[in-house]
Length: 318
Length: 218
Image (cartoon, rainbow over all chains, first blue to last red; front, side):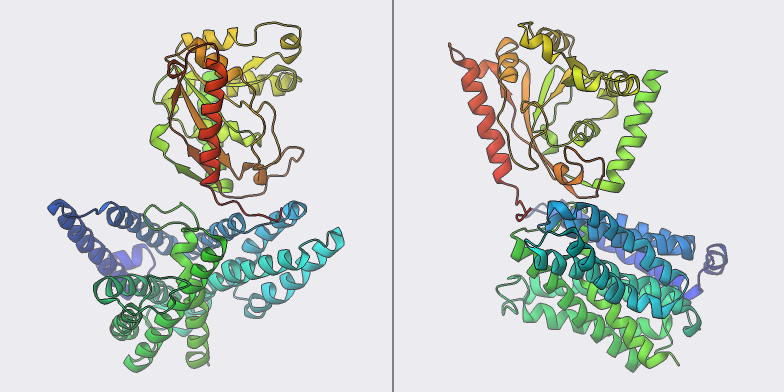
């Protein structure tokens, strides 16, 4: 059965097993949520919404990796586009820059093209160098200097976070192929995405159960040291088991990677929390019921994806 | 044939385009009417307003949905007229005739009596993005003359950023639609019923607007 799935969808067998495991966890978790809400104590509306959304998100992710590499890259690019759109909708903008913002969306397919054709150097410099130089110049040429620095700063930062950082997922998928005999690029992608999301859930659960000492009371009052440490440790444990199965890393390196993903995920999450607090909104959007917007879901990946990518590239790519 | 085109346009083209380019956050969707007659009264910043509002209603209600729009603008030109009248299904308001004293509301009252759902914009034409303009009182008069028809205030935000007046360039932005609690003409009586209704409508709209966090430095 696993062999058949592997050949039908052209997936490494280890990824097939891991995906089935992910679905098993989802089914069990949904069962627990249903059982809890059936007992009726407390309000489980949000938890049910969250769980239902996980079905959609894991479904979309499974479809994307099972179809083929191009579908997966388009899927990841679409997430970047949604995140950029949500970001640009949240921040103040100048009316004169409307046309430029349309142009900024174009950076998404171009950046993912570099990832898709595995042009690593261009992938690295396109947003941080070329887009960074181009947009301020275009804005300056239009001649409006009021709020110029703010407009340049917010746009550059948003492009870095939603396009450049998230596109590391696609680069990992494509460039990781030859460096991961165990489960290919898709194994690496699966590893970082699932661990970063798992880390979010683990920090949330540990925080709910034992949280009392706040890490950043001003940025996000719900984050506690107990949640952070418990979450990262849980992620390290899962990474230790999952790493050797999905990546060329042994147990020690996998544990270290788990730590990198856990801490980076926490920082990415805090980063978006600070943005939301600055703008005075609770959620970045309403796209995903129970979770908020797409930025609320991928915030940890904006840090975890590049952090893991470069960790892996530095230590495991000749 | 036109009917099929209309369903395809709203079911596939409009919904698909809105899903890809805008992304709507809808607050209190359950307050939208599920049958006619009803009046949806929203603020107006963009041509997208009408299409987005209509896309929130189930397709089964499409034959009953009638946006109210200016005849001189939308019926000028063959293609635009066909799109507006047959595909979008507008009820044209003739602004020139209204100025000469014709009753502008007769056609709308007839539509309500047929059980249709009017989509109208009391601000009249599209205003400055994200700023509530002055409301014309026609909707108050309609509400008073049809006291049992619910009027649903809707505040739309972000559309003026995505496709403002005077631009044909659609830039993707997330937009918000907040549906307010319905008002009935019957809740207001006496000689100033229309004015009181408008005051009630305005306060609902300001409440909805105040609940949105609006980015500044435009």
